[in-house]
Length: 154
Image (cartoon, rainbow, N blue to C red):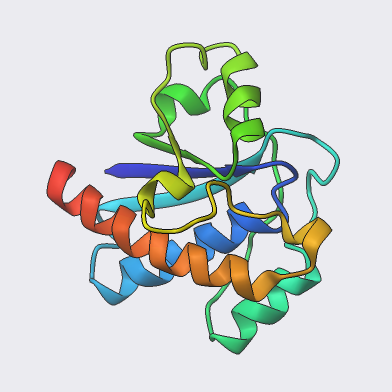
C-alpha cells in the first residue's frame, strides 16, 4: 500500500484539509485499497483536536468527509511509515528535518506540485482566514499528487 502524510504546523487547518480532499479523490478513482492518507503537525498545540471550524465548514460545503480525524504530531516513525511526506510550507520542511529520521527523508513541498502558481507556500488560514484560497490550492495539488503516485507507484 502506498502512503501519504500531509504536514502543517498544528494539524487542524491545511494538512487535515489535504488529507480529506485526497481521500475523497482516492475513493472517486477506486484506489482506496492501494493508497492510504494521514496528516500530522510539527507542533503539539492541537493534538487530539478535530479540524478547525473553517476547514470543517469548507469540507462540509464540498461534501467531503473528515470523520474521525484528530490532530497529531509528527514522530520519527512517520519517516519509515510513509512513502510521500508533503509539507505545506518552508517552516514545515525545516521542522521535519529536525525530527530524528527527517534529515535524509524525501519531503515534497506542496506548492512544488503547482509550479505555475505564484504562491510558493500554502498560506495558513489559521492566521489568514482564507480557507477558500487554501482549498483551491489543495484541490489542484492533490490532483497532481494523485496522478504522480499512480504514475510512479501503481
